[in-house]
Structure formats: C-alpha cells, structure tokens
Image (cartoon, rainbow, N blue to C red; front, side, top):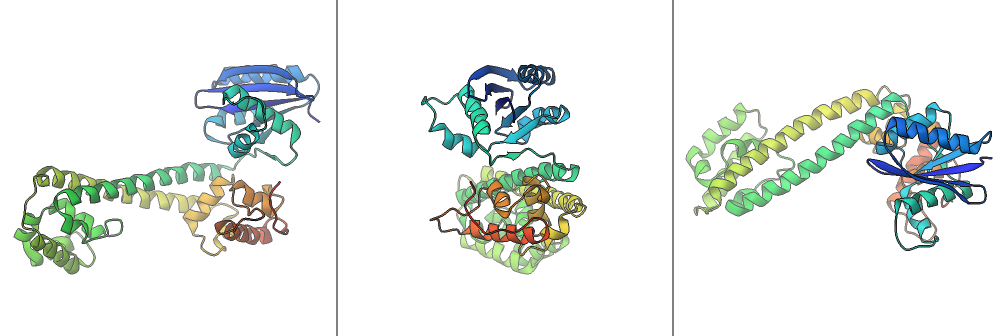
Length: 343
C-alpha cells in the first residue's frame, strides 16, 4: 500500500501538486511549471518523502498538457491513476471551502486517490493510437471550421442573394460551392445563362451540372434587385466557398491517413465488426480509450470511460446503445458482465 498520495491538478503552463499521507495530512503543496527539469525535481522530492514505501500519483488529465508528466512518471516506474474531471467536480462539494483553486483541486485529487478503489491507472498507448488521437482531434477541429464557414457563407448570401442561399445545401453540394467561385451574383448568372453555365460546371467535373445550372439561373431570375451588400458580400462568399473546398480536401486526406493507420492496429477487425462502426469512428473510439481494449476488465469500465454507462433511474438512450457496443467488444476482448452503474 502506498505511504503517500500525490495529486496533480494539471494546467497548460503550470500545475499544482499536493502530497498527503495515509491519514490525509498535508505533506506538500507546491505549484510547478510544465518543464522537464522542474517535474523531475518534483518526482525526486516526493519519492524521497515516501522513503522505502510507494507513492501513488493521480492526475485529472491523461493526455495533452499532462503528456510530459505521464512519460516521466512511467520512466521512473511510478504508479499513476487517472481521475476524470467530473469526479473532481462532484467530489469538491463534499470538501470545505466554496472557492475553486488549483491547490484545492490537487488536494481533492490526492484524497480521492487515497480513498477510492475504483480508479483506473493511466496506461501507455501504442504508437498507432497516439497518432490516431492527434489525427482525430485535428479532424474534429476541421469539422467545426467547416460548419462555421458554411454558416457564415449562408448568412452572407442572405445579405444580398437570398434566392441562391435557399437553392442549395452547401454542406453537401460540391457543384454549388464551385458555382460560387465564378458566379456568385444574380446578374452574373443571368448573363452566362443555363447552357453555358452547364458547360462551365461540367468542365470542372461537377455532378448534375445541368440541374445545378438551372436552379442557379432560376434563382437569379427570381431576384432583379441589386442590394448594396452585393459587391462585398459576393467577394466574401467566393472566399468562403474556396475555404470550404480546401477544408474538404484536407478532410479527405486526413480520413485516408486515419484509415491507413487504423487498419494496422490489432483491434481494427474487432471494432469494424460492430454495427455502425467505420474506420473513422472506430479510430476515434480507439484513440479515446488509449488503444488498449484489454485494459478494461469489465464492460462497465469501458462504457464508464466515455461517461455513457447507464445509471439507475435514467432513460438510457445513447448510453444503452454504447454499452451494447461495449458488450460486443467484450465478446472478443474482455469478459462480458451484467450491466450496472459504475462505482
């Protein structure tokens, strides 16, 4: 059994460390920088404090800003537990003091590590899973950028050409985005006409060119009034259309990278056998669990990591669906058990 528990409240540049003993007595409370030399000095200090006994470290992050600390602790054969932020948040209500400080959170993390028996150790992920975590995080950012750009494009079109805004679904139509690169205004569409616009779109390898051209020209004929916002608005729409197209190209390349790396992982076949799981979704799942299905001793543990395990008295919904997937995984990797609320 450990003699001391060290809780780390992680931040981007600094983190706070609190060390307590078996009785919960405070032994150390210190703010440290996210710097290799400083962290090594902290590890040495805490290990020396424990003497010949063990130290149990605990942190509220298992990646990102805690990556350096996690690697250094693993290199020094130190036990490290992961305490999700939601546990810290709920536990804080049972501790004295209304204020939220890094020192208080670090104390809570250390104390929870001392008292609880259901916390999971931080496991080192394999290289493929590490790569997938970074790639899927980048993909999430791109998806958000794409949604933002499409919303801005539609909003700008409404400022000067509402008929064209409602004519297409710009989140799905490549031809509509291509159209905006050359003919984003009513007068421009009327001048080129349906036949020449169809040929222009075909030359750029757009699908359903004739139908897209007809809808665009119909929208132009429906609005003869030029608004004061047209000159600037059309220029912005053209740029936004190009931005969305560029994001689509990067997403395609990123999906290819994700798929290539994911298919080389030992758990790829198991995950792809689940209903609704394709390479990208399965890769995202794998990245978020650290890449090690064998690291979960029960189905509940696996579902709890995602915060989706159903609790008593709740409807279930997506939680039940996810746990069903977890059970399918369990058939291939971990023992299946009856569903219950995680401790």
